[in-house]
Image (cartoon, rainbow over all chains, first blue to last red):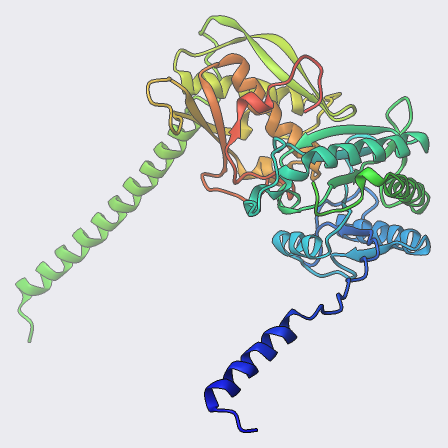
Length: 235
Length: 205
């Protein structure tokens, strides 16, 4: 039997449509494993030395020491940790925020040290909380995470107080932190003082830093255990 | 052969040139001294002849990270800019005093000048922008730290608001130029809103 060209083309078209309507096997993507990333930002570094502590050490070194200690504690507990610096190098504030944002972090903690005041100073940004939009302004991106940052500050405050450390809380303008799209706080270690305001431990003291790092790790684990707080990209 | 009258004329002109050079050096020296004396007589402190008035100073405390208002009596000049400078000078005198809860050396001389300008977008509202020019010595000697630097900035803003309700915005300069931070932490590139700095009594910023 010989078919005309038109008939052959028509049959081919029908065959192709039938093939296209065949049910295809659906590949369901595997549910992504829950990632819980902690970003630790040791402030200053390189030429930016930060404060000169009473012990003679520079703030940048004290911050890095606490960062390394905290990273070890969190990694040992199976958490994924991203640090903004691992050595004495200068990292721009915008670069630090970029690192935190790319890490899709669940917790961002910036570490500082000072010779003034007393105990641990906790800060969250003073930005007014705002709803998240598709495109957030770089300098105020933290506004969408502000409520969760305040909750994180509360959790860290509880852990530090529970560890017997004096804590003060505040909200101030925080360049760098205000560009981070994660629950973010600043932890500034001041000297430990007794009732007469005499210094009992400098911020670069090994024991003091170990006590603070342990409390911070406990706070992060407590924060992680609350399912309503996980998921960094959903402020 | 140079004629005698030309030699005499040359010597006279040389003596006149040297004399004028000496006189010019004297005048320059005198003008420099007059300039220094003028700077020293600038109103760095409120004139004592001005009547004493009450001013509210919002004083920082490093130990509990708080700002608390205190009422002080001090002579205040009539000019608003000089008045603002005198109030801030008193605040920084408190910080320079021994047993201060927020120790910063320098005192009243640390506030070089306060300029009062119309705030941005303040059409007819009367809102003012205060530009506080601090000295480089003050910034260099300020203790470094997020808490201590923020308390200084916020206490200045809150003190200005407490005494000059029309001041809604504050900007900071150091030695007349913009500077990224006060002592490595507090951001000095932004405009501070006094409404955000003024605390309730004894509260934390």
